[in-house]
Length: 439
Image 1 (cartoon, helix red, strand yellow):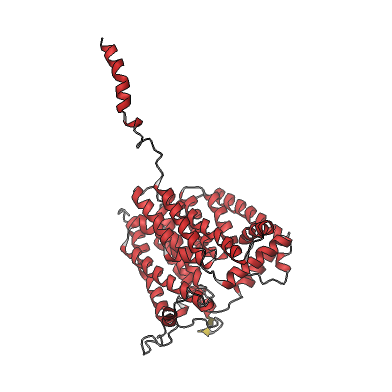
Image 2: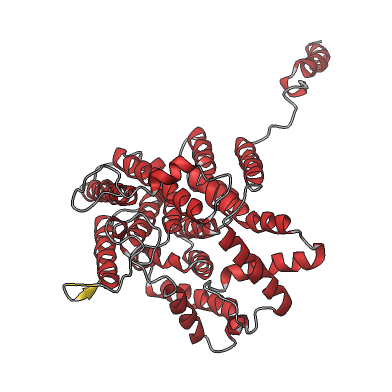
């Protein structure tokens, strides 16, 4: 009797079961997917705005040249080429698409913005994965914050530049190193370097991390595999004259021999758009910049020498990029951008007010710096005259303080002022590790 009653009750229980509810049986869309789709749609809309004419036009010419002749002897043509081979493969693909679909000028510019848009979405998802030790709400909010970060929206979807790709590959290197996959980290780093050689900013910290945490056998594997990847990317362009890559990189570095080339940084305080071959106490500004970057990087490594975990790795990487932008001469306004992705990860993990303060200061000035450069070379409807005139103001306060008075110089001072709280945070985090305090 009991069995019969139980059997009779079973269909009723099934009918009442939550699993059979039409609402609950609907497919649940992951929140991160919603964030990524929204971020992608926003970028596709922003991509309709005019890009940076010089850069987009150059990319279009290179992509057509690559489609017409491939990578062989590309650097021997009459084209002005100041890029390493990495991104040229992407432009080659776009050029081949143009051969098939015959893009109009507007369509071509739009397509050229798509790689950066894809890189932004991939970076947001990678940030979400990297923060897997945090609360889900915080991981989603971090990905959303990066996708809505003004500089991220502006550089790729509007401007049409590709610094988003370097940011992605730097964070990918951090991710793989933090997951104890050093060979994969080396490959990601090399690809990033081939896209944007400014990746060299993070190399000292990556090298320190690898040397500290892995035996010589692993170092050899990383170097060997990374060298093979670099060879595979460069042979189509240089044949077996690999040393010509160095010549190309040196040429690229010498195109704009200015202490600061439209960059709000240390040199922007007093040498904005001025040559860097001026000597001071026996050294040119170029070599002073290298020395200041080296000293700052050594301080970062010293501060975090015993720190472990993804947070410390991301923090050291981001700070090295900031130091590179701050002190090395010949910096462009965009070269600070790759620092924000690892810095955001570190800010979320440590939730340090010093980190957040430095991050916020850099974020505001970076966006103004980007807009200034864009508006100076592109007189279109995105240029707001009163903002541009303020950024160009040669006499901001009406008096000189230490010979600093232009808007550019004062904003450069703000950039420099953001570095001490960031370095203080790194030193404090490292100190807590050494004294056994929780971080």
